Amino acid sequence: MPKGKLDGSETNKEALTAATSTEAESTKANNAKYYNGSEDKKAAHDKAVSDGKKILEKANATQAEVDAAKQAHRRCQRQIRWIRDQ
Image 1 (tube, helix red, strand yellow):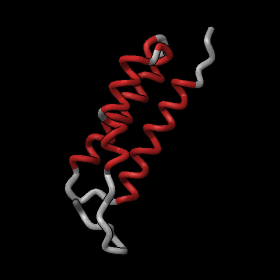
Image 2: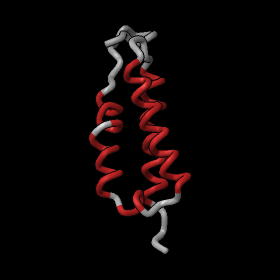
Image 3: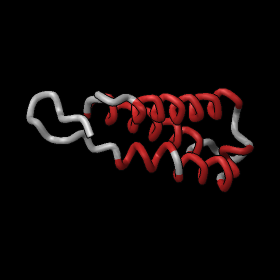
């Protein structure tokens, strides 16, 4: 794992790894609000997952990049889950 820019600690990618694999697949497979959601919300979620995977593949990803990708994914999940039933 790459080392953090300032303090020498390793970049922690665990949460982003889970978000872009198991959580993402679970959201798509088991979340009726995702399935029935608007195309723009689904596209935003899928883009956040794709962008997160690119960060994970980056050999020298910083903790800030990893954290930002995880936050973007969480925002998309919240938007999908908070859509009111119509």
